[in-house]
View (cartoon, each protein chain N blue to C red):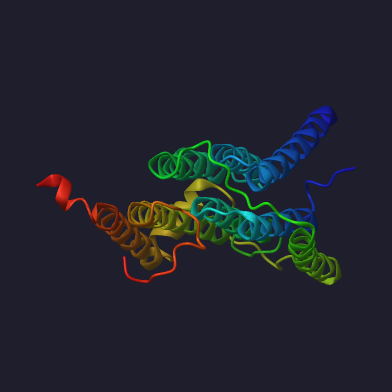
Length: 105
Length: 174
């Protein structure tokens, strides 16, 4: 059975990636674990863009360009979040989001 | 030849399973390093799915940017923060696990039913093709402003990351 040429397959894989990210967001106890889960959510969105680009879009370059932009923004976001986590760890000696409660660093 | 089509289909299943296994590992593993490893595995699986969607260029970029840059950055964050072998997942008791699983299952089945019931019509007429040349032309003519904006965002992110991670080191520097 050929399922790799079907739009719904990719959409369901993207939905599963979103749910994996959501579950990891709920379960992980460290900020880096939550960052990893957010990468899954971003990848689900990018896979959606690529699937629609392949099957229904009139201009097949748009989805690829949007996916490239998502990758760039994810890289920028990861850099910012990692540096924030380093600053938080230097202040609190902990990465537990439940212990980091003051706004002022 | 038809046999190559079956091999491609088998590879599609392999990439799909790789994605799910990596996701499961990233979410359920108790060590942070294993979670990052699971993320890398899942991202390689998604790169294979991009290949099947007809864009080898994006598959390459996925491996280069995500697996090469983002995962390495997260690994650096893990090493600079806690000890890497620290246990990081919550000890989910029965009730919390049930609540988290039911929230995720509700979201997934809502999406699933919506996907199955929607009729996606293919485009009436196509412009261009999936080639990297067409992507480059679109990127530099039609989407030039967004292309420039993302370079500004990356520059801002680099400067912001340096300033944020540098704070509190003045005492050491003196």
